[in-house]
Image 1 (tube, rainbow, N blue to C red):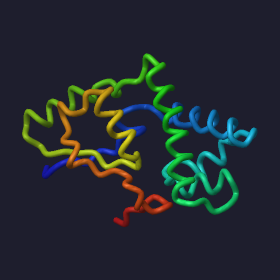
Image 2: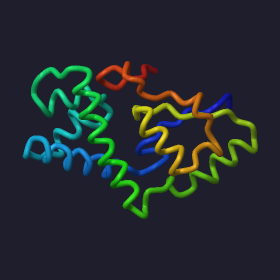
Image 3: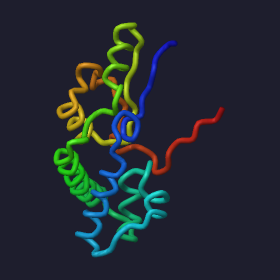
Image 4: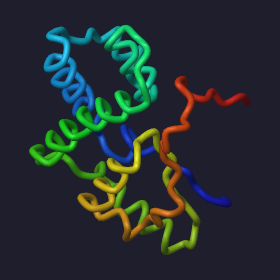
Length: 152
């Protein structure tokens, strides 16, 4: 094995419901409406903030609007995480990562999360004991709107 690349959200932590709750709270606050399960699948999961927020507001948004709204939603998400006693790496993940280190198998994270959340994860979940933040691939604002599909 040459190395491993991990997705983060939903793979190393189980936080899908926390993101959905944060989106519901944010959208209710700014629009007075809610999001259906079908809309979560179509417009939210695996999408970048531009794609999702332009769907929510049903109009093109400026880069500043996208940045501000996305940060507002992510602040709600981080509060939900901190208030939840189950905000931890999934069972077995720390032991698995330590084993990879012991066997000198390189690994890192590739995530659709932005830098603010990535910093939050490193601080609150102690990720620096396994991962080099400078080696993590994250959404720096240039991520495409739809997930990349792997061709085999």
